[in-house]
Amino acid sequence: MDEAPINQPVNFNLDVSKVPVYFVDAYVISSGEHALTLNFAQAALDGSQQTIISRVAMTLPQAKDLLKNLNDHIEKFEI
Image 1 (tube, rainbow, N blue to C red):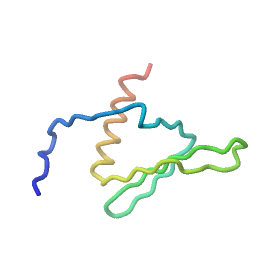
Image 2 (image 1 turned 90 degrees about the vertical axis):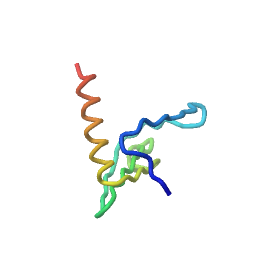
Image 3 (image 1 turned 60 degrees about the vertical axis):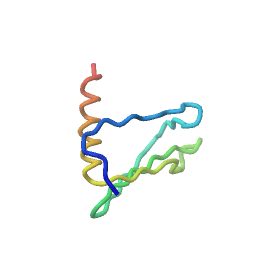
Image 4 (image 1 turned 30 degrees about the horizontal axis):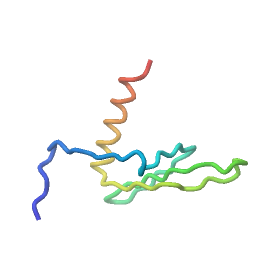
């Protein structure tokens, strides 16, 4: 199977009626030798419990790239 060339532009499709957006109150990061997992949680109404609502796993190089891009994005839009 041929892999896509690195840094090749990718088109993303987003159907906002089918892909929910979640506001999160907390996150938990876990990692292993080859991957990193981000767990996103929402608080219960009384705040006594957090429920994981979404999990995202990625390779360590992807996590480093995400961190770099997130930092760049935040710096561009900070006042």
